[in-house]
Image 1 (cartoon, rainbow, N blue to C red):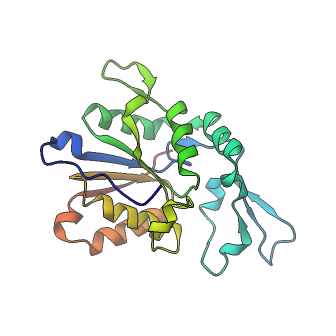
Image 2: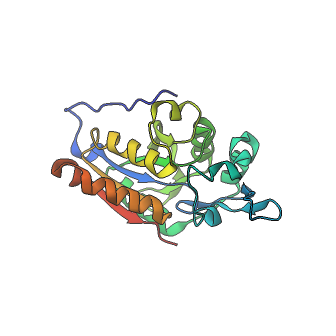
Length: 216
């Protein structure tokens, strides 16, 4: 999907122009049976890492070739990793609260295969309505607000080299669209990059961005 973000008209209310932007792995869910494979020169054999373990790796442009992301290119494994995932209730409760207050929902993940991620989340994700009833996410999650920064089409419109740079680049574009964004991510490197972005923004854009480390 080309790197485009829908502009909202001035007639839309403020409540419709606020966004909660969530990471996927270890933020809204604990993924099932999907791994990153590491084979550094210092490894005696290939090492299988969960997304949570991978978040603690010091991945750079120089050593990224030693990491294999094949599971994240496999539609069957991607779908299963979401459909069989364990929900992280603490962060989903924040989502529920903000959706009830008129926020839109967005996804910002380092995964690839953006369409598969969207469809998987569309089938799996539930939220509590104002009556406290758990129901499918439905139209609360729109395709235009799902960003997988390593998708083969998405990455064509991004200049960043690292996952963190790419996420910050998407965020900067979204701040031109929304009046307020709450970003939640489990990876401290993503949190730090967003804070660096916030520090170099104009005052107007800086005041729109709120950053929160995911709960567990």
